[in-house]
Image (cartoon, rainbow, N blue to C red; front, top):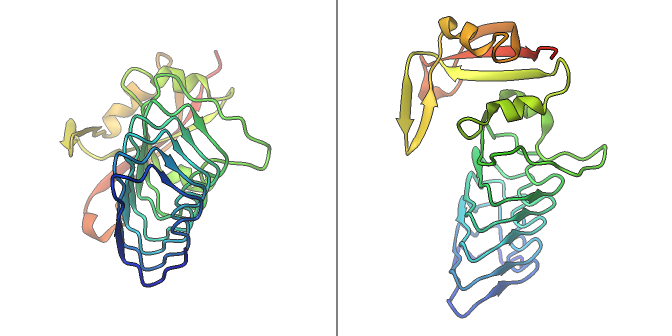
Length: 238
């Protein structure tokens, strides 16, 4: 708790629980190894660990509790195993996650779990059916305006189910790497598109009509010269 000089920790196999606030505000902590013996994480267990860059949660854990990794401003990646069924309130609030994959085992995500993350640009969900969230009016899961710039990946063959969740005349934003064919990167597959593919994506058959489309340059320095096809589409009336 508030051990500013602690830079790394290896938790022994005899430990089964990491208690509430155990490493709260350990600002110098850069790495942690959580063994499979751990079955429970406490609320805010790593909250405020501003130097922690990545974390791998063992598949012995079922719940990521509230504020577990909140305000971990250097945290850019996290591995969520298929054992996780619940992600608690504000679990990753204020972190710096760039991408997140949520496995199909997750059946509950509480309010603000991924809120105030200004860096996220890619979200992958593995649910065959869209997950329902029980939120109050002022609550949200992600920082909503940023999702207009994030790419959402859903399982193959489920797009129609996610489309069905849009309200009448609901707006869907899609972004594709500009080009042809499908590419594989780190075991993940991405479909490139050009203007010629818009009619395939948006038609009476798919239930969408194009509102606007444009090509943009990638703003990341390491991606100079790469282009993206951006499409805003409206759900057609049934």
